[in-house]
Image (tube, rainbow, N blue to C red; front, side, top):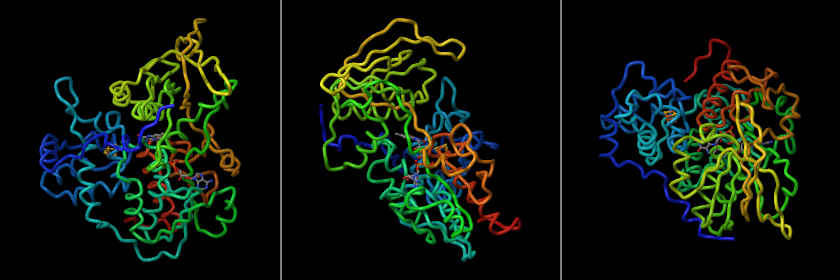
Length: 438
Ligand SMILES: Cc1cc2nc3c(=O)[nH]c(=O)nc-3n(C[C@H](O)[C@H](O)[C@H](O)COP(=O)(O)OP(=O)(O)OC[C@H]3O[C@@H](n4cnc5c(N)ncnc54)[C@H](O)[C@@H]3O)c2cc1C
Ligand code: SF4
């Protein structure tokens, strides 16, 4: 096992833009009428407007434009896969040109306002209504903030001791340095009118029926609390762990040293797999290989993430799936793979196999709804909580959004939008159809 100080993980992926760089980059925007980037952003931020505000030396006004649609604009600027969202739609995306750096400009503006500590919103006068929000992740806190803005008293309950959800426990350290996740939560809560209760787990310490009695509405933003099983014999051997738990451990151990194997294999093809692999390499692993069962084009990780892995010395191997674990003295020593072949979406094995040495295996094969959430009695769709276009569940007093909901996209920005939409719908339901939203 190799180990290195966690400090080596805390180097910012992109250095923040200077004032001059932000001005030059903002000058590249054509300020399109009907700008396609606005529709490509799941939260619908008025991107040309905020870029123009940077260009006219008004970064605080620019941040307000961003926060009006996305109160997690600071985190999204750091973690959105912009190359598949807003920047992909930029009209400057041609072979000879490159898109405007929307994410980096968004970070420049939001950092500028957050640094002042000024919160651009105040809670409306009390509506007399109380809403319970379960989960202090991006979906829950986005919902809570919009509800407070409209004057509703909000209590957020979270099972863990810290707020932020996967912003705090999941996103790679190099994307969110300097304790940004906690600073952002403090900033969001500074609107007032939101109480947060930690160590309160729905299904254990709280019941849905009592919340329904005590509050006028309930929002569930509980994410995906369980992981998919590999189904391999010996999966409990030493050296095998879930990639999300590995990353959570890294994020929560600022002073200690984290152990990583010499030959690390990560199974999966999404952002979690790439984050776990890059962090293993930075921590000092000699060989890190991401193994994915389909082709490279099918990987959920974006081209940028894949390139990031490769430039950090991570090997990507595709069309291979785990067949058998080799365990010696209770610890993993090697992993045997089947080669695979895809045809018309169907995956089959070719009959050939290969074996790779491995002393640390990280499984990044997806998360799933926690068992206790699936037992709440709400209608499920593809094992997530079924919601309509307003994020309302099969129970008219309960809304849900983010990763746990049927329209969840496993992206921070999508969770923020779902929380915002749910808050608007709850506000309408509580204040009547003539309700105006701020
Ligand atoms: C390793 C990893 C890396 C990622 N990287 C990126 C990235 O770079 N960019 C990106 O856009 N997305 C990324 N994602 C996805 C993104 O983090 C999620 O889509 C987003 O956090 C979902 O927000 P959420 O609020 O729905 O859920 P979560 O962030 O999971 O928050 C759920 C909250 O609910 C609480 N909770 C759960 N169950 C209960 C209960 N029973 N009672 C009380 N509280 C409960 C949890 O403690 C948690 O605080 C990544 C995900 C992972 C796992
Ligand atoms: S929130 Fe994300 S997708 Fe939307 S404009 Fe900002 S960086 Fe782009």
